[in-house]
Image (cartoon, rainbow, N blue to C red; front, side):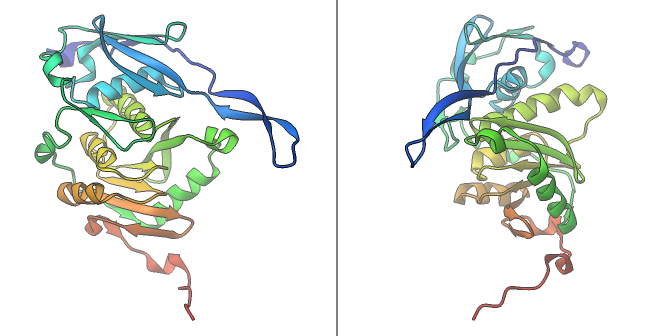
Length: 285
C-alpha cells in the first residue's frame, strides 16, 4: 500500500539566491546591487520531460513535490521514490514507484495562469473542486495582526534584493515555514511539498493559515484548499475568480493586510473580529 512506502529520497541542492550586478543610478554613479537569481529547472518524471519551471532555486525538491501534488499528477508524496536535482544541467529527475497513469492525457491541456513567471495548471482548473471539504477553523483579528507583524520583521530575499514573492505557513501566530521564489505559485508549491513530507510527523492543515505576498487568484485559493488550509491572508488583493472560488469552498480570504488594515473577501464566519484592536477610525472631511 502507498502508506507503507517510505518518504521520497531528496537531494539537498541549493543554488545562490542572489546575484551581484553593476548598475548606474539617476546621478550617473555606478554601484553594486543584489538582485534575485532566476534559473530554469526542467522536471523529468521517469525520464519523460514534463515541464520547465523558472525558479529562485531555494527549495527545488519541495517545489517539484508540491507541483506534482497541486497539479493532481500524484495523489500522495509516497508515490515518489526520489527527486534528484542537478543545477549543472538545470534538471530535476523524479522517479516514481509505479509511474503516473495517463500522464499524456493529464498534461495535454494546459491553462497558463496569471502567476508571475507564467504559472501553469494541467487539466481543468476547477476539476475536483466540488470534492474539497474544509474543516471548521477560525482566525482572530489579533492573529491577523500578529501574522502581518511577523512577516514585516522576517529577514527575506525581498528586503535584500526585491523582485520575489514570499509564502508562509502559520500555526497561530508562529511561522512554521517561509519560502520565497520568483513566482507566488512556485512558493506555494514548495510549501505544499514541505507539508507533504511532514505528514508522517502528524502535521495537520486544519489549524494552519497560509500567507502570501501576492494577489489571491483562483489558482492560489484552489491550491491552499487542496492543501487543506481554510484561511489565506495576502498583503495584496483578490481577483474576481479568486473571490468566487473562495466563496464556493468556504475559504476565508483576507487581503490588503498591512499594519492594522485588512479586508475580508469571503467566509466572514471564520473571522473573529476584535474591532477595539483596530484603533480609531480615520475621519474624512
